Each structure stands twice: as structure tokens, then as C-alpha cells.
Image 1 (cartoon, rainbow, N blue to C red):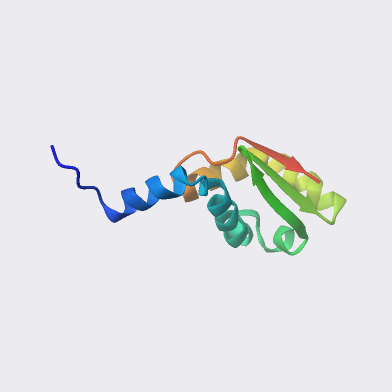
Image 2 (cartoon, rainbow, N blue to C red):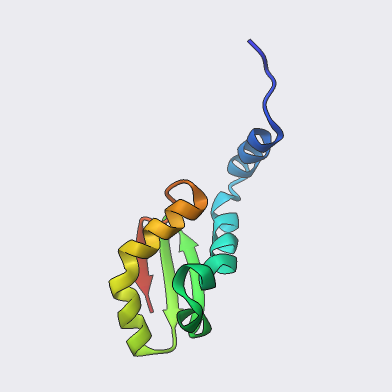
Length: 94
């Protein structure tokens, strides 16, 4: 049996071991938000936080907040596809 692993596997283990996975996921979500939610919603987004599988999204427009309410399931699916794994269990809107 070999003790060799790919660089990707070693980095993933290190990131998880140091407890950095959630912060890196949050940063990737912020960077991808316009692609995931669309330009209009992205322009009105005031915060994006990821804590223990809960994505908190703040928007400065009540109608867009309502639209996001209807998009929750779709957004979670898009995020899952982008990350290739489950990152967000729930989306809370502010």
C-alpha cells in the first residue's frame, strides 16, 4: 500500500485539518455570487456569510429578498454543482 496522495488531496486534508474549509467556501461563494444569483441581485447584495451550512444573504431591496426566497432551492442546487459537494444546507435572508 502506498502512502502517496495527490497534491490536491494533501491540500484538502490540510485545509480541513486547520478548519479553513468554511472560510474558503465563503470566499468562493462571494466570488461566484453574480454567476449564481444574477447581476441584479448581486448588485443589491449587502452581505454573504457562511456558518455551519447556513448561508446568510443580505439584500437592500424587499422585492429582491422575496425573489431570493423563491430561489432558495435552486440556489442550493447551483452551489452544490459548482462545489461538487453539499456546502449550503439552508439560506437565510436579511
